[in-house]
Amino acid sequence: MIFERDFNNLSEKDINLLNEYFDGCDYQSSSYTYIANYIWRNTHNITWQIIGEYLCIAGLGTLETEEGEYFMSFPLSKTGAYDLSSLRRTIEVAKDKFCKAGQELEIALIPGHLAPLLEEAFGERIRLTHDRADDDYIYLRSELVELKGRKYHQKKNHLNYFERNYEYTYEEIRPDTVKEVLEFLERINDERVQEMPEDWQHILMLETKAIEELLTFVGTGKLLTGVIRIGGVIEAVTIGEYARTNRHDSVLVHVEKAQGEIRGLYQAINHEFCRHLPEDVIFINREEDMGMENLRQAKLSYKPYMMGEKYSAVLLPEETC
Image 1 (cartoon, rainbow, N blue to C red):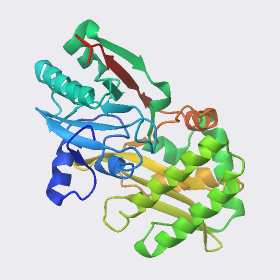
Image 2 (cartoon, rainbow, N blue to C red):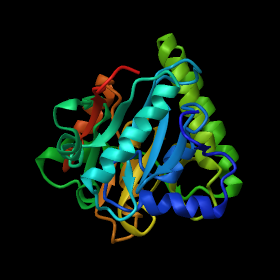
Image 3 (tube, rainbow, N blue to C red):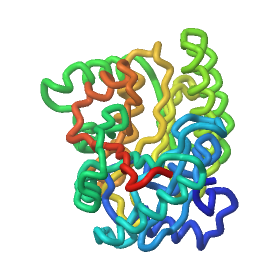
Image 4 (spheres, rainbow, N blue to C red):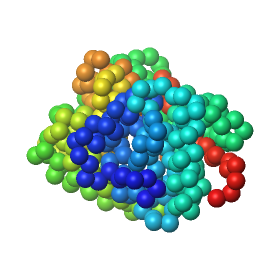
């Protein structure tokens, strides 16, 4: 463990404290919620500690290996404000903790609009790199609902085809339908796993574990969910949450799965989910593409309103560990 606490067995007081930091700023990132960290807590060996004025989180960049390289997320502010001297002290303490664990400090998942703070705090000691594969795709909810204009012509055609040719129902996931959702995931995974390289099969397995963790929050009021049934059978699922617990203008979509052979089904689950969201939701964050070309093209095809850019940084030591 890099930091003092992990995400297991946290009290309600602990979770409320964490949420104060996750809610402190508009990070324009899908990585900075309690749930997003909780569901990956074991596969990434995620730990946390409040150092000075900021919440620091560390995790493995390589999944499920004790000897992998750790990184630290950008320190989170409870107030949304950053004092350069305080930020510098926090990062230096974190660097010492990494050093004691035999690791070099790498700061990752740095929101693009906050990256300049590190340059101001450390000058030439900091080396920033844009991590394109980690950039989040952020859309206007209104555009995903209306699908107006030439740029959405193809999406609208697929959606219209689905609506003309299939009788379907849309509903939220309930505690009594979680089992059906898991069975749906198992079914589509079985269909896809044979076509995947071995490395991606492993990632799919770990992703499924994270979704199972996510589904434990069904019924708590903390998730936004939807499923499409065709002939009474679940054929598409989506799961998200509000990006901040203290305001509801932005939604993160953690999961979107559909039976890919059904034309228009992906467009339908996305459209129905966005259409059923409260009117005060403005932005939809559909997370990163992980450098997968087919996923990148799919996300670009929905014409993002903006990208939540992410950077990583290496802090050059004043002296060697």
